[in-house]
Length: 336
Image (tube, rainbow, N blue to C red):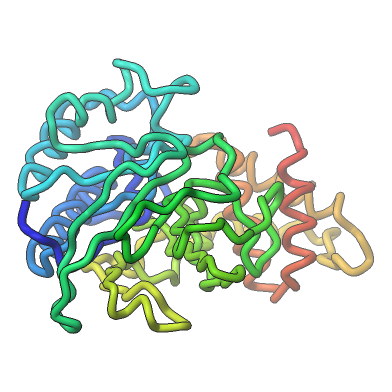
């Protein structure tokens, strides 16, 4: 492997052979996923970058589609190095990866490596074109379900220490069960996957936290999110406000089907009044149950359908963020 110019950070790809019913991909969700992966390889080769995935490389721990596996291996062979991925929550059946998890097939095919949990996994020698400087970085990570450390021993002669996580984290927006951000002694930059919606960069003393969002929009609330991968270089790290440089992928912007059925059904409920300030939350949940009934034949998970319906209502009624979160918590407690 030649000296790379930096890192290419890729939010959760969620490769899947399952069609997401609310999307209208030109061919299929699977082909969309594979196309995005092909674009990642082309960008990495063009910009001479080392590829790091933020977890959930596959959408399901039960994924077993041979076509998807074959195409994925073929695409990743287009890189001159084995990319790294953190182990997310979607791609393992148990606490650890097992032979029946598809990610293990990529490791055995010698086209992917995974981070060693809570350890520095690689020391990379990179070259910054702008600074005309060779330098070393250390990169490590914390797998989903493990505790993020308070400090990491920094190796000698390392310019920067970068850490990868896959956790529910408390950025500026409230998030149920989120872990507060903190300074990790020795770590310059933490890049988080798992949370599909991009979050604003946040500084905790000497540690910068980033959460760029995933590259497969699975839910309606992400309809307007740009699909990007992100470049990290030593020179750009000095940018106080944006450590990662977005590179937009080619993607279908109007990917989601219009929720006419949901809107028509809610309009027919003349006895329903949306008034969250007066705590009429049970009426809201009744409306969500009506959404579920209308979508009984939808192959998508029922709870996902309900959450999508809620997000449509939130946008239509301009519901404040704190009320949205309260209602999402309530919906998550309802048995569907």
